[in-house]
Structure formats: C-alpha cells, structure tokens
Image (cartoon, rainbow, N blue to C red):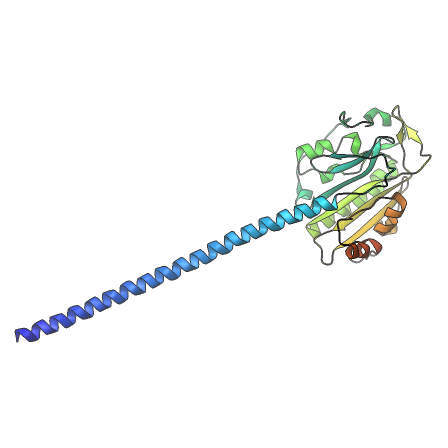
Length: 292
C-alpha cells in the first residue's frame, strides 16, 4: 500500500515537473519571439534611419551639382556662396550673371520678417551701392526673392546684398515678375523642392545708372527645375524689363532658349539624355499654366 502511494506521488511529481518544464520552455519561447520582434523593428528603424540619412546626403550632393552653372570663358564671373543662395557675380557690369538656389516647400512657410535695408557686400569686387539706384527710374530688383529666404534670418539679410540685385522697372518688379515669384513658391510646395536660377540677359551697349555705372538689362530670365517630380521637368521664362502684362504662360520658354540667349549652361550635372529632354521642351499642363 505504501509502495502504491509512493508510486502515485512520484508520478504526480513527474507530471508537475514536466508541466513546469513545458511552462518554462513556453515562456522562454514567448520571450524569444518578443525579443525577435523587438530586434526586427529596431533593426528596421535603424536601417530606415540610415537609409533616409544616406538618401538625404545623396539628394544634397545632387542639388549641389545642379547649382553648378557653367559660363562662357569670356564671362566676367565670381562665385559667391551665401547661406540661402549662390551668386555668380559680374564685377564688370556690377550685377549678377546668375543667382541659383534650392527652394523647399517647408522653406516657403518661414516666418522671419523682411529685412529693411539694402547692403553693399564689401567682400565682392565691383559690388554696387544701394544709392546707385537713387532717382534712376529703376527699382532694386531681387534675383533671389526676399520672400524665398524668410526661413532664416541670415539668409533674409543676405538677400539684400547688392550682389543679388539688378535694376528693374517698377512695372516688372511689382507686376508680372512678382506674380511669377509667387507661382514658383507654389511649385516648391507642390513638388517638395525645386531648383531656381534667375538673372539678367546681358548684352553689349546696355545703359548704366549711378556712380558705379550699374548695367541695366533689357530682359530677365528665370529657370526652374523640379528634381523630385515624376517625371522630372524644367521650364524657363523671359520677361522684358518693363511692362509685363498677361498670363505667366505668355513668357514661358524652354531652358534651351535661355541658354542660347545667355551662353549659360544649366543643369550640366544631369545625364546628357535627361538634360536634353528636360531643357528642350515644356508642358504647361504639368506646370499648371494652361491658360494662366
């Protein structure tokens, strides 16, 4: 009888031990599965973060290459890099050959107020003075608009350097040109970011103003490239330095046309086939300019 009780107790203990072992193994499996899930998501997060950082680095490098502008060897040209834009400055004519920068949708939402005074950049040979424009009949026209630099206080201030300024008739500066600048900011918000190049069409025999003899261009260009659009696309505009009535689409041209008139080579960092494609044609519907 005693032996029977001992065998029953032994079997009971064995069952208990087996259940405990199963429980421990099951718990270990659960913890292992949970750890695997945690490691999976942490790994994916880290991988995604690293991937995002790498893509941002590559995007930044591409934008930097896109902002490299090529000029004819005979062009008087000095590259000046500011916080928000790059100026290719012509000390002979005392105005920029080209001003280029990336504008993101987020930057268009900046809140820094407009700077109040125009400034001479003493570090740039041939930079005009603000008073060269006084009583000249021309306004101080920003190539990189102040409204595009409101994301940063220093960038806003630097947009008022005379290296970023050209003589513009008020009818252009506050008319069609201003309307185009507003549209460019719309595109930056829509396409997440764009590259914008702006400047005068220089020609022989331009009239001059002020003590510095600042050249007065007869026409201005603006070139826009959407690097993150699908498909990537570009458009350009030519405005006369005067009346600018009518729809923006009236002044739209190909990038090739601006290059022909100025001798400047834009977006040479692109693959040759893509460069030829985006610079040779425009689609007004893609730029929301049909009838506008």
